[in-house]
Image (cartoon, rainbow, N blue to C red):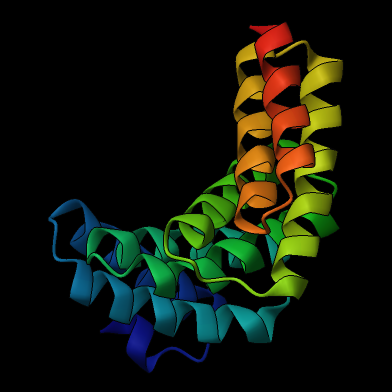
Length: 168
């Protein structure tokens, strides 16, 4: 109630976020989504990209919990882009991978999405190679192979699968 009466946008956004988190933990994803979206609307006024990224991710997780994976995609992409803008590649990578995975599983992408996803996956692959994360490299290579397979580019699909075998 204090937050509702307050003129402090940050306080309101924080309270709404906390309510969304409580509802999410109670598996009341519909109410969680409601409060998280309200918090996001206020956060946009504050210009806090890190908190905005977290909220987009939480909204995406709520949609996934409700069984609406496709609705989660734009929020995963937005969260990943915000983390990218903050040079937080480590936080962005799993969000990109999740968005790409959902898109591929649901055939929810167009040529522009494919180009964007391929570019991001190549960036992720370089990051994983530099970090020495072989299992993550295999996952990224397999995802790239799937994207190329979806485009009926079997030569590139086979090339990425072969590279994944060499790592494993």
